[in-house]
Length: 362
Image 1: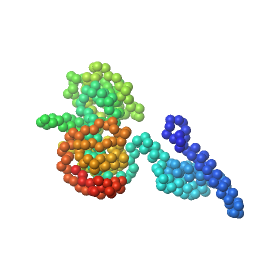
Image 2: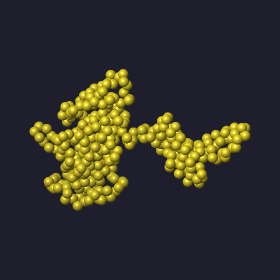
Image 3: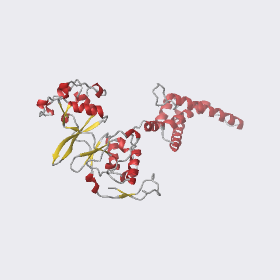
Image 4: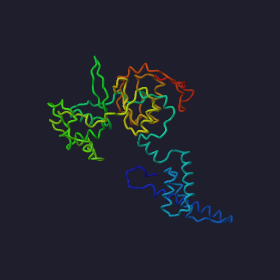
């Protein structure tokens, strides 16, 4: 456990098995000496070593059935299946009373946005507008290759909404028409496909559906997609047009800003989503939600900040690993008049705090 997670070729199972076996055999010697003094029949020390290794692995990895099968297949002692299983179950239960498992702790240290199966019930009191990223980086349906490459180089997002700008009076609305992943954009601009993808400025009116490519051509390099650092465009190619209509997802999942975070969480967990677009009643995109926005730490900060400054125009603080994400509050003035409702406060807010009364959303 001391060297787990560092970049050296050291395993975890074998050291845990050996350390558990040593501790188990030591306990066997001590108990054996006591039992001999009391005139009780002494069990073999190897049995204590086997149970000790199961207890050590079960307490660290929090595995039960799979751990029992691994130990039985390794030792070939089938008659110890039930004791090993009960030992692993007891080690798992005692470990959960102290802290999380080793893998869960490592994911938290690495800021991996892992979502448990069931969301907290107080997620029903938050709305999508409370946790989303405002004004996401969007791509036009047709853009110059130079602009696309610049966006990819300056932003590390994995997915980009594709919009069709519509000018209505003095305002410009961004109608969501699809979403495209970063790896697909890099593949479209790669040396292998750019001659078929790029459209010269004189043929900008050409429809992208006329390109003789299919989905297999785009995913042929899976899982090694080209990186944006390796993309090089000459001056002529930079002025060409990229049409995203041929490879973008035309039906991205989307929700209204008034949708509850509990419902959004269920969509991510059950549908396996990585991005969720937030649109207003006109279909204009106003925000994006990723797994980072649904973590318990982030939602707690959003809740507490809304109690201190209940205003849509003041953005809440973010965790350290999310503070580089640009936020603004444009295009959300129309959200100020949404219906309100109440929900009891969650357990992590003290009852004697200034914001301990029921929170009104809106």
